[in-house]
Every structure is written in C-alpha cells, then in structure tokens.
Image 1 (tube, rainbow, N blue to C red):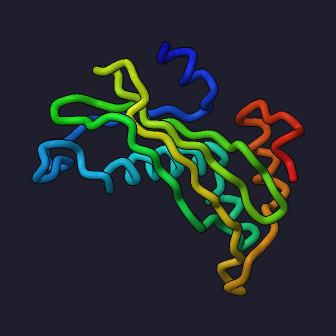
Image 2: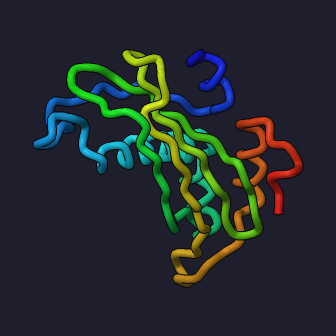
Length: 149
C-alpha cells in the first residue's frame, strides 16, 4: 500500500525519529510533523534549484499557511517517510500536499498542505511564480492542467 500512496509524490525522504522528538505524553510532538513537512518542502525547492532562480530574480518562496491532520501517534525508535508534491499552481502561489508515512505501521501518520507565496525579497512584495521555477515544477512531476489557475 505504501508504494501506491508514495508514487504520487516526486519527493520522498526517510527521516529517523529521534528520542528528543517525543514529548511528555510519550509520542512524537505535533510540531515535529511540521518540521518533517518542511524538510521535504526544502528538498522539493532544491530539486527545482530554486536558490539559483532566487539569485537571478530576487523572488523566493515563503510559507503563507499550513494545515495538518494527525492520524496516528508515533514513537521512538522508528522512522518516517516525508513526501510532498504540488497540487495547485497559481499566478503568485502554489499549494503543496504533504504526507508523513509510517513504515512501522504501514499507514499514513499525518497529512496536510501548505500554501507557498512567491515574494520579491529585494522589493519586499508579492511576486509572480518565476517562469523558470514554474517550468521546473512541471518537469519534476506530471502536473495535469486542472491544477493551474
């Protein structure tokens, strides 16, 4: 089942659960899941070479909002697979779907999404998704026309 679910995502990464990820209630703290989302999101940015695009255009990403649904508690020891993909690409933003898979439980541990807005950091204003970054998103994963605005 995991391979079917994870095949939808161009970015997947295995992350070990650290002892320090647990909280007083003996399970992984809720905030840690958001860090796992962030790790996959940054890997996505690197896969699209967004740093080079940012150096060329002064336009970069910023997380506008994030939503998460926790499905099962996780504990140390173990690992997770953090995955992400773009599900909607608009003029000045895009939506990323995130998933945390537990190999130990063979189940989704958490899922969510984040809205990424492009910002011109030199002008400190919202900006259009750079054409080169848009092209790299499309090359990284098969995007169907319905995700475009």
